[in-house]
Length: 241
Image 1 (cartoon, one colour):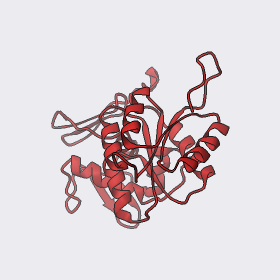
Image 2 (tube, helix red, strand yellow; image 1 turned 60 degrees about the vertical axis):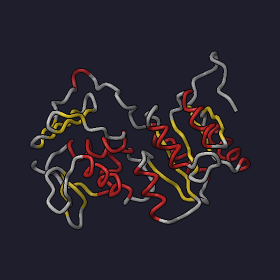
Image 3 (tube, rainbow, N blue to C red; image 1 turned 45 degrees about the vertical axis):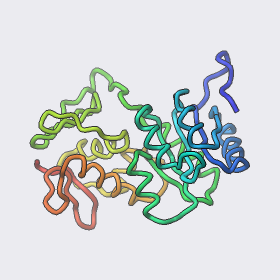
Image 4 (cartoon, helix red, strand yellow; image 1 turned 90 degrees about the horizontal axis):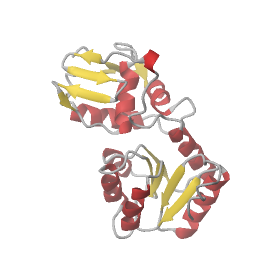
């Protein structure tokens, strides 16, 4: 399946579906195309990495692939693209999900899944702003500062002691949700709906994984946090630095 010719009407977005189960990939593609997405298919890890050069908006990435597994494919995609990555796994073990998110996936679904739910997840991702999307000039916020940590919501940049911290797009969005109202305690669902949008669906505890990654990158000890505090029974809030 290929993109439509350049003179056709714009699509809802470009999606690369990567799965070695070709019949399943075609079913997923048919549902996405019915929702006005333009779809490409890849069935091996190396093909997926090569096709990312065509700059898809979203990659639906199976964990088990020939050539390169989904984790390595995800890692390589993240070195060259800020596209959204929705990882698929036939295994329900928590470790698989954590590994996928740790190398840059934005969300995950476990097989078997509803193709309609998958399309809904993709639509939610597409409603999130692309990395580096500028805010309207009249709405430019000052960077949020927490001790030596600076969070610039406009240019989507995080500095710690003047050094740029390399966050994934989802990690930044989670941190930005907390920075929008410093010292306010946010529940997991609030954070996810801020980062993913109000129509987000899925496991609320995915936010815990992303918070854990942010803490590691900020050298923020959860036992004695400076930047992200756990609020027992609620969720998280920005610390005092």
